[in-house]
Image (cartoon, rainbow, N blue to C red; front, side, top):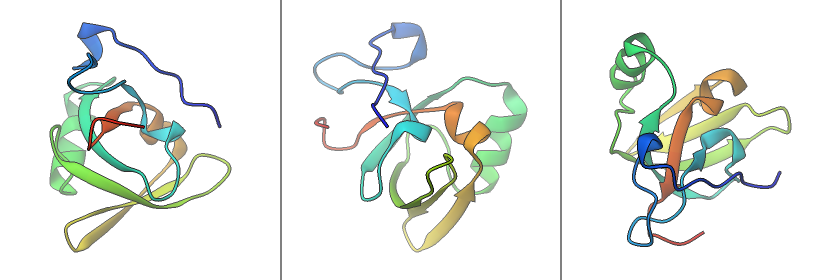
Length: 98
């Protein structure tokens, strides 16, 4: 899947210092990413924070199914995310490069 890239400041940092911003659903297995913003309400932000995935944290995509479902890892924990939720999480490469 091709990554849809945006540098819209309303969607989070995306300038040259931070790298492009794209939905988590477009990430590939093995990608190390930083959650930069959410395209949803406070409920999703709270749910992700409860799962250990707040805005600003670094994650790694461990497994990705073709339909958009993902398993991401942070520290020693892993979280499975559905395609809809992954599409509302905006990320940027953790090291600043795709």
